[in-house]
Amino acid sequence: MEIFVYHTPDQVPDINKEARKGGLTLDLPACAIVIDVLRATTTMATALESGAEAIQVFDDLDVLFRTSERWPAERRLLAGERGGEKLEDFDLGNSPSECTPARVGGKRLFMSTTNGTRALERVRQVPILLTASLTNRAAVVRYLLWEQPHTVWIVAAGWRGGFSLEDTICAGAIACALSVERDSDCAGDDESIAAMALFERWQTRLPQLLRYAHHGRGLAALGCEQDLDYCARLDSVDVVPLQVEPGVLKAAALG
Image (cartoon, rainbow, N blue to C red):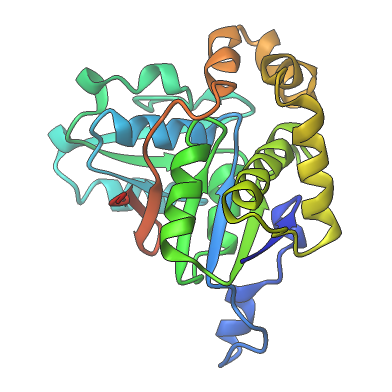
């Protein structure tokens, strides 16, 4: 298994563009993992653990509204944020603390966020598409060990189009755990080596790193301290969000 890390969605080869040309000219990975620790992929895992039926992601809000209107009102929730704040007229923002069983159980979340949903769109055509966070790192590693994909792209959502500490450290956490479980180096590029080094340096101080990161500072300024603590809880959620059809994520079956 080889891990390749992309620090932003823009670094990922444009699979969808190549497909529209009439055929792929690049080799797709067997698996892609999208990470947006603060907070989209953390929220997704929490919502599915709390019994949400599925999460359907959108980059375009107009498409989100049109699609959600075809779903029964009692079984849908609109979840969205821009710049860390809940979108007007949406049921939920992008906080895992909102995703309680009473709130999301049995419902489909129609979701759009600043960074995470854009990253998912970039790798939508990969055969196995997962989302990961620090909270569900162990579950993701267990799924990968079961499926044994040869090539894995880890795509960080990033922050404002650039590198983010929190997403890269999560990529390193996954790569480190896989290397330990397989007793072999799984780093496929220098980016994955750097991500592993970052995790090894900060793994006992994840809450501090999330607050040190610029994205974390922004959320702290918005009063999201509780979310920062929750997002730093390594291996605390036993759910893997898996794309089951384009843009739709459900909880994967874990052996």
